[in-house]
Image (cartoon, rainbow, N blue to C red; front, side):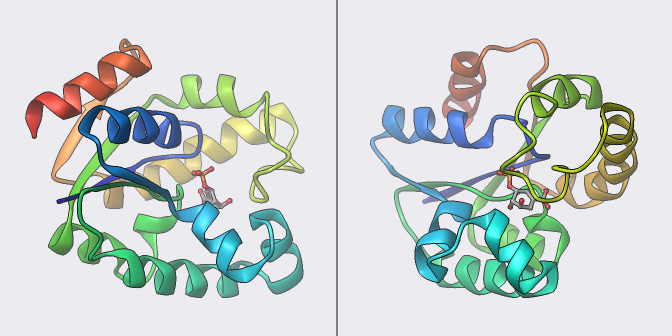
Length: 168
Ligand code: S3P
């Protein structure tokens, strides 16, 4: 079984993913870290040196190569479900879980660590809030296609993990 965690930047996919993998005794894959290993560049450098279009191509290729993983929890990037039919690919081959988190919560997390995230690194705090609100509306159309939607706002990381594990 492959479980894929998806959602906006800062929703907790990687932290919950690692905890869930430990709990289930599964492997954990972070798609962004895989892309970095394969290209030898950080995500920030890939965006800067090659551009977003190239990043999205590598992102889809890497997802396609890993989609048959078994006994695995995978955290994908915030944009992964929104490009190149990736959402359909994930739904056809995995149990996709959307970690739904309100814009205000995402903002309070992302404002603290924008540097590693190329899409938001140069935004002022007002621009960041607008960016989150605008892109979340577009992205949720994809995220909401996930098999399960977990509202994370009132739950601890541990509770979110348990909530997913209980449903399996
Ligand atoms: C992106 C999210 C990032 C990373 C890249 C693009 C996006 O992953 O894939 O910077 O389009 O939202 P995280 O959601 O893990 O930060």
